[in-house]
Length: 139
Image 1 (tube, rainbow, N blue to C red):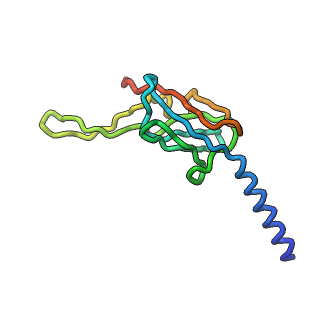
Image 2 (spheres, helix red, strand yellow; image 1 turned 45 degrees about the vertical axis):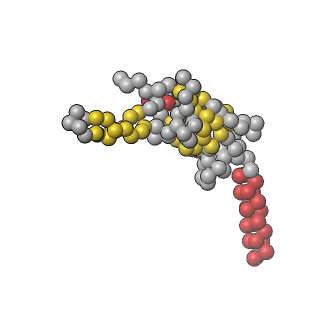
Image 3 (tube, rainbow, N blue to C red; image 1 turned 90 degrees about the vertical axis):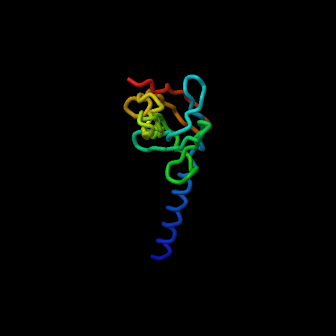
């Protein structure tokens, strides 16, 4: 009985490890329409059943992870959107003091799964996915 249990656990462990090997190490760059980097926020790849995320660096680059940093993304078709793209800014209040305000940097169309029209199919040959978004124009 113990021998069967050990064998089962070994087979299960091997199956779990081999499933992880399907992950694709995906990175890319996000820019505005003028080519400048989107240097704040998080890129989300959402398949409806799994989500991978990557924090944007100041140069607009990201690297996707699902559970652990750098563990990649499973192959599949994803809707891509950005979150946390707001930045703090101090603006003069008129009385000599400054007020801290939150400034939206990216057009809201690109900040939810429901409104983003950016999609990508990731397979073993996919290594990078660069894309462009519009700046928030205020409405």
